[in-house]
Length: 217
Image (cartoon, rainbow, N blue to C red):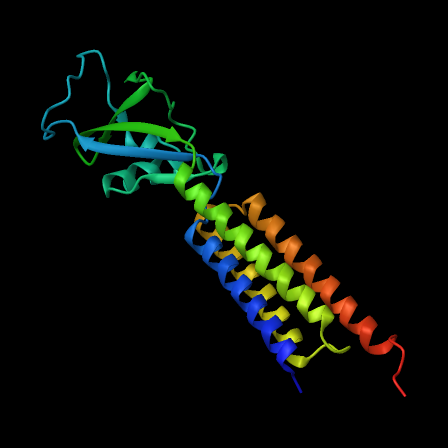
């Protein structure tokens, strides 16, 4: 049977879990370098590109797999990848691009395209929002864990199920991040470690209180 103290603790832990999941799903690339690739047709662009006569188009087939993906995604209007492991090795990212060095002429299916790579850090506003969600979630988790430890000496079934569900959700977010970005961000790994450590501490405290606390006559 779960008393009111357990219920309030579980609600706090559920709210913390929700914030962690929202942070992981909304900002899976938090802290990662952003690499963008804009692609435009040279022959039909308005205004057009001034391509020197000595610039030879690079065949699409000669690009690396990551370069091909970045080009095709840029052609569809979404050529952004995150993190150094996903950066195409074919391109140089610079603030002063020149043909062949920061700006590239690519031939694809009989058409010439200009590819302009750009890079920059994760957005400042998004990073602040991500950290704020983690901070608020951590505060709620700490409050919920403290309240659960202060509740009558037992570990309720609801608390155990809630902890298992929370860990499962964090693992799901980590797997989702890996599938989408090709890597697990260290902050996400840190969040999982903190969650497991906190769950272990709460479980230990509860079991200790249940089995080792002095029995009341």
